[in-house]
Image (cartoon, rainbow, N blue to C red; front, side, top):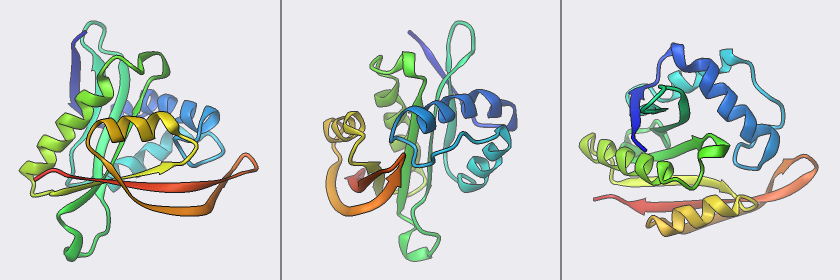
Length: 165
């Protein structure tokens, strides 16, 4: 399958929010508990200003199958070489290589802008994401115990890191 990566724009808000809201309601991949309105998408655009942010579309019918982006880990100049990575793939498209392709694209774009370190914040209950990141060269670099709570369940937040120099 061929995937198209297009810069995220306002026009993608409904499809992207549908994907994101699925993970809010059905997993620990997104930390929120309640579905968000499409207007929340503007926050994604704001937090990714100056960083690569893509909607991933099916190359045949141009429907969104996911989205991915880098964003500042911290706005202070001391951390300008570090970015946080995020990607969400439509549930029926997981396991088809889209996440790996998205990560590779983000790494390449990150390197071009001087990023040397990628960070991922992952719920300890999100075992598929922990495996995915380990398989793709990330290592656990920190764990905050029992700091999150979703649907009555307390969870750890695992930070993973990858050098891309």
